[in-house]
Image 1: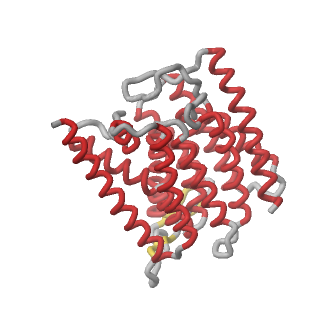
Image 2 (image 1 turned 180 degrees about the vertical axis):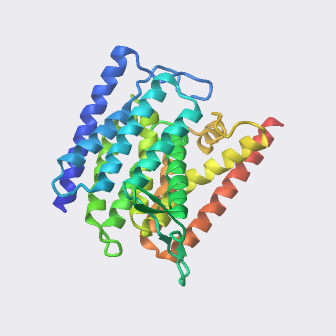
Image 3 (image 1 turned 120 degrees about the vertical axis):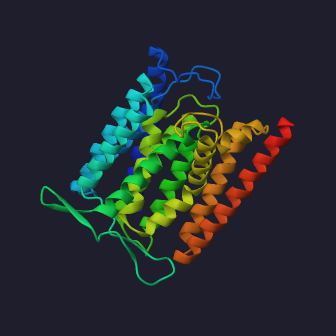
Amino acid sequence: MFIYLKPFLIAFVLSLVLTRAFIKFGDKYKLYDKLKKNKIHWKNIARFGGVAVIISFLATIFLNGDLQFDDLKWGVIISSLLILFFGVCDDLKNLSWKKQLLGQIVIVLIIIYAGLSVDYIANPFGGAEFRLDQIQYSIFNIQYSILGSLFIFFWIVGFMNIMNWLDGLDGLAGGVGLIGAVTLFFLSISSLVNQPPLGIISIILAGAILGFLFFNFYPAKIFMGTSGSMFLGFILAVIAIFSGGKIATALLIMGFPILDAVWVIAKRIKNKKSPFQGDRLHFHYRLLELGWTQKKVVLFIYFICLIFGISALAFQSVGKVLSLAVLFILMTVIVFGLELRGKKNKE
């Protein structure tokens, strides 16, 4: 287990030190999170905590002698650096959603070109697999799957934006990301998957997040910013599709934020607003309106993600599908309950 403990500790200590340094840096140069009407904090708080997470993650990857660097790992590194660049630009200049989406498209194209592929999705009920490699295209004499590439695009872009939207309360996105990283770590080193390199990458990610959370949990002294939230979504999505068995796992861990995002987008469209317009329709904001404290809301969402993360480790394919069904029913009941409570409050 030392091959996992050592990189975890290195990433954790680096993240602690760098996050503390960015707090002082942000205070010195007044690099604070912008106060907006859909924000819940009332004082100036430094951002760029995500920069500390990304640097800690990448530095530990480079320092680890048990990882071999192939084209795909270099693609992850280059994509992470681009996320760092676009995220910092957004934190400083508040980029439009179109420019953010353009940056995400470039990032996904790089990781696909580096070799990330999905040829099939396993049928959880047995039988034939769902093939995604039937239609091929060629770039520089390298064959790619059209359906597989489209799946990767929507998967990664979806995760990046969902994690970005989730970053609304102190410690929320970081904690969910930590649960995801730890769950994927245990799955990677299990006899079912048995991929130690992915285990090392996952535990490095967990260490980098945990060091940051020491300063981000309520009351936060620093925020991760766009770079941090987009990076967490990106890296969790990529680790999940290194092996088909992790896709259902990632869906269970992120199922609650995913369903929340789908509901909010549908609500915005119904109200004839842009799906990308910021508001306080998200589940965590709605619980705050009911009088819950930030800490209570965050711990409640942690609990849900943790329970379904454990179920992803405990169950096989059919069990994971049933767990997703239970999660969908749970989220539907909660959403309708919040809607009814909101109507009663208005009346």
